[in-house]
Length: 350
Image (cartoon, rainbow, N blue to C red; front, side):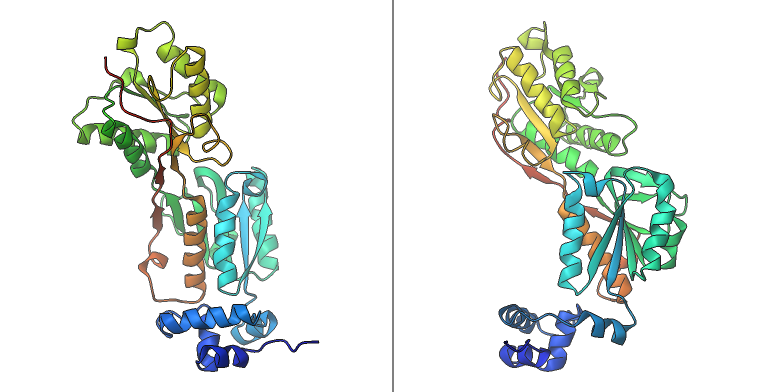
């Protein structure tokens, strides 16, 4: 049987000291080991199939090297599970493992779930939600380093750092894309008013119009909902029986499912996308946005990036890293990304 590689084997292959290997593989390389040496160490560790002994690390550091993650329904969601995926990427790269519990939207289970994770001696906690929302932070999260991902503390004086998408900028950049194509009559199917994200995206829509000196028609903004049928109904209300001169030339949607409904309504009315009507989505939902015909231009929610940023902040707090002010601030905003496909084009001439 082949001998298991040791940290000394990694050090010899990378041409560095054993202590440098320990620093890098325990997540403390930045500021202590040159980046070129860090890269060589990681490459050598991968080639030798080396990983630090988790039990030995725990005994030395008085840590379990386990992070507890509580979600409202992310585990059973095909969409926002990317947040946990991004968080786990960072945790594993720094020698931690994650344990996830899902309350399936039963907030009454939050406190007991947190206590269960604390009983497992987790080093830190992360709370993750499907969709941006305020939460009542379980008291147990204040007993260890903790962070919120895609949600924020509803208390008047928040105590926990939160990582959320920059929804205002996302709404603005989506609208700017349409304005740059010459659209000046842009309708907005904006979701539901009780969603914290919806008014932020509307604000971005308004900001883009103001910057372009383009007036906003209030009758073009609909709090339509989130589902395909809502997109269909909203579009028929905007377009059915309306003369081409009075129709909006583009419809911006608060999510990609609404955009599917818009596309179905446009097809029912015999309109070509994007020649007669441009459609803008939001989320970049897998197996929807990229498979539509035509494929959907959309704003990608940075879910994996949110998870990575939240876990980085949490581990920095646990390891008392001085490298960034983010661990001391209360908010990190992660930018959304414009994904240009085939559903948007120049405004039709009237």
